Image 1 (cartoon, rainbow, N blue to C red):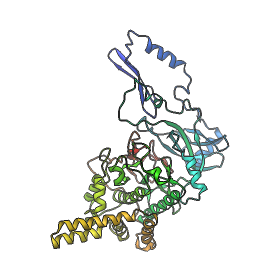
Image 2 (cartoon, rainbow, N blue to C red):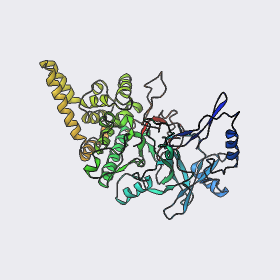
Image 3 (cartoon, helix red, strand yellow):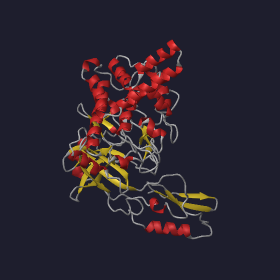
Image 4 (tube, helix red, strand yellow):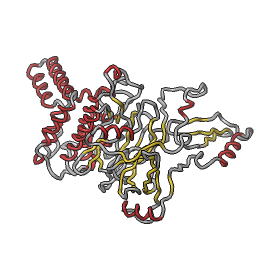
Length: 498
């Protein structure tokens, strides 16, 4: 909660921000009315918790500080804090980490922050996620989703050690939501959602997908994430945000993370219309169908399509290509945000693009062929030959449309998509062993391109591994899910909150 004061000449307005939005008072003529002085008098007598202090954060004991400092590899002078997380039996578990080094990018939104923390009870390092979850009856807390996934034996997902809402609901949930429908409230197209303060601890920290040691490792991690996706879908859960920030790597294995925006998979009659008129996912990696149709229903095929964009984006931004200008054009025109709806360039890309005819990935023929197999490159070449030899433009379009349907047929099946990955991963010798991630300079005269997620939750997520030190966090203060917590890895994400 934040309470700024806006003064204009002889009037003042008090603003109350929370993770849903802001409530603004009528103008107060402070030189005539005692209301402003009365507000400050009441505020000075309010409890620390009422003013916004988080009482679930405390100072570690000297013994806890020493153990955490050693485990985290920190300088002894760095301040530490102890965070509590509700346990399964109602008691609290405690974790120690350094004080946050940054704040969420905007007041409204989930304000997700991730930390490498020292687990006091286990004496090990784990990952802790602090966020403001969407608080609606049909949205399950992420910890309960992990329990469902773990109980179902879903592969390549993490295990939740503890999770729950923080302290009393009065001060750890948004209140703007309660006044949205009041007659005095300003009405607009803005889609407000209630939020509640939430934490969970996960067993693995991991590395970002863009910290790959080889392109083989990166592609394998995406394949592993697709395996988690199909297992979860069979268990009745759709993840709905397959993006680079939601795939991590640990011990030669990829994990699909960030399940707080997932939804249960019902029967087809329940999926004919979306639950709300907003989109879910990370814009650059959302399917052409979802971006182009605000009322489109999100199903597993949209996430399969996202896997193509994940590989294209990571490869273009973090590895060498034969033509940087073409790679930059791909990021700007195909994977770049273009308003509230769009998706036409992605649909065109799936039907046929010159990108893969003009751009190669040096020393990685298997990677180029994999992307070519998942996009209609060879058939598009044939389409051009048909058009050139016969001059029949309509026939060319028929060929393109036919292959587009074949391409979408591939994306209609988990097994077909995973088999495609496995076909190119079965022989590691076809991949260079040490083509590790290197941030490319694609926009030398601009600041880092923004990755957009929709609605309020605009956060920085990926300007890059600026110094090549291999650490980073994302989404909100830094990172949405397990990773380390340096400040170097950031990306701008516009997040769809359905």
